[in-house]
Length: 175
Image 1: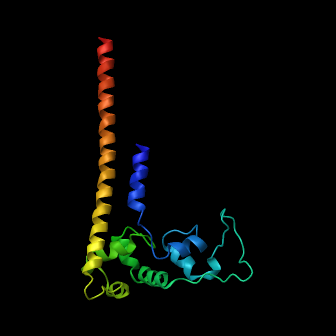
Image 2: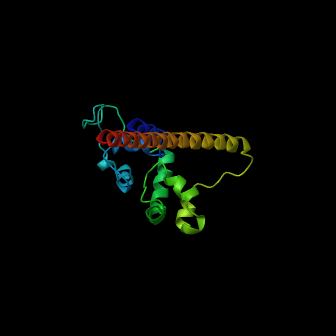
Image 3: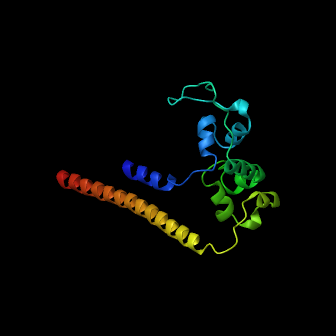
């Protein structure tokens, strides 16, 4: 059963990246939730590590980390939508599903005006091809998730049948 849970985790987590994952992994590896934003915004909290995770100093000529534009925007969304993330997104600050929660899982009427203003605006125009690609990607992801869940259920069901058979054999032996 463990391998199926691992497969399910890989399917569900494969696309769960936030715009700040790279930066947070490089300079805030031990931070979680809101701490990630606090760390990213305060260079004095940055922890540089080598490939083995050991602390290190900046190399000669190496510049301190500069946040990407996408990460800066994501930081602003997390700040502006603080109460909404806490209330509607189970406190998933700086998480891969933060934007999905705010834009798809939560009703726009539940979001405050500051949060709505911080969210990226939907692009206008003909994006039919992109939408079709995204719909196909979502369908593929949903099918993979369902297949993993079905496999887990099948394995659970198979385990229960084996238990029933072994109990029946025990009862037959006792007679």
